[in-house]
Image 1 (tube, helix red, strand yellow):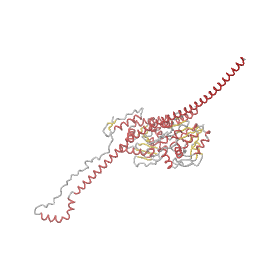
Image 2 (cartoon, each protein chain N blue to C red):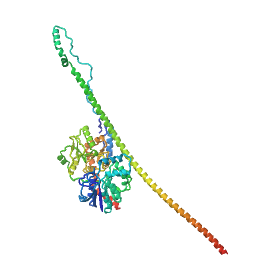
Image 3 (cartoon, rainbow over the protein chains, first blue to last red):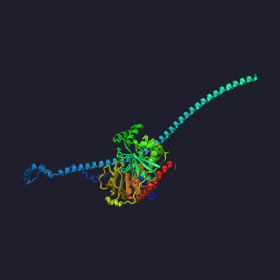
Image 4 (cartoon, rainbow over the protein chains, first blue to last red):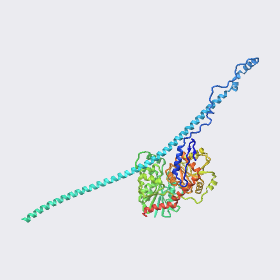
Length: 213
Length: 390
């Protein structure tokens, strides 16, 4: 049975031959499974929208300052006059000033949550990129090692060949020198023999003369 | 036949790396050969300061000859020279200067090797990158066997080592990947060698329940055993593990065993137990669902082999070629190159007990076929017999 990954994509089940466990095959299946998985973003604040009150720009209306008409109006006006110095305190207590404060705090809270979310998302993306980069580094590292090994092998072979060629040319020079010396020796031997031959010729002629006379 | 094991440090206090590897091999080969160890007086691998006063010692029945380090390493100067040779155009003399700084600078050890060549049939050098191997192999190339313990780092590409890798009579590699890398660096395919590694032994009886009772760990857990260090990839393991838990809501725990030089995140599902006795370590592996091995650089992970010997699957870092190769060859573990792969691979292993079981069985089979001490001893004997023409 296939499992589902966080992205809702069904993940293939890892098939294992328990009688003959193949580690390379299991690792290949694990890697294929990871490759299928979409990057999981960090959790967004669940009630972000609900927690983000939109400032409407209007507040509940407070009690009107217009005195109502009628017989009790005079007494009320006097009372209002007496109360006037305390008006700001009364307003603060009666009017929903604190609501504005609460809303501001909620807006700030929302902003903070949004910042937290963005920061977590940034961290996640960074981590994903780092993981990808890490994998790539391993691949490159392995390829590089392989290449270095190959090159080292080739270099070593080339150096061996150069060494052999060097030896060969050295030997050739030695052999040629020997041959040249031998050649010179033979040449001088030939000259000696030529002279011997000439001398023998002369001797032959002299002997012939002596015999004929 | 007399063998000399030549290594940068040697002692019971040193419980990891090439030095422990060397000690184990020497102790296992002493039943076949007359074995001796040639080493320095250092314990601290940062400064190589002389620590052991005695020139001679016997450790687990093996005679050890120690030679003084004439100059401790100055990490600041070493860093400067290393930075220069890694990033600037330089000559062989610069690399030799680097090697001298790398140390441990023990010329008396090299003199001893030169003057006593005839006293030994073979010198087995551990760790190619140190002073003792470079000059030691050059002193006695016809009697040298090198256990390079090389990792894929820039040092292996220095030109002084290209030449060095052509000198020994034979190689003992830790993994196929290491052999491939050294071949590609120096084209020394003609020099005989075998992938051997190191053997491991697990106790006949281990109990995950005992571990849970003793250390009050309940529920499923992943175990990490080793030095808790950034170089070992532990920072990434913490990051991935916590992210995995957050995303999946899994109840799995991470149990950490070993000394730490890294700040461990404070989380109720990350249980740090510090350095534990061997039996507790094996009990912890026995009780775990899997072993996590997040290291970037390993020439051979002994704890991974121990987990496989105990039938536990492994989740390894794919950026380490050796670990990835071991997982593929053993069919005993999965690997990851990033978080997405970590999550999928861990999820698959945690939720598929049948896969864990199958991988555990594969791991155990791989261990039995390649990493029991009988196999390791046979391979060493085969290499030495091969050199003797037998």
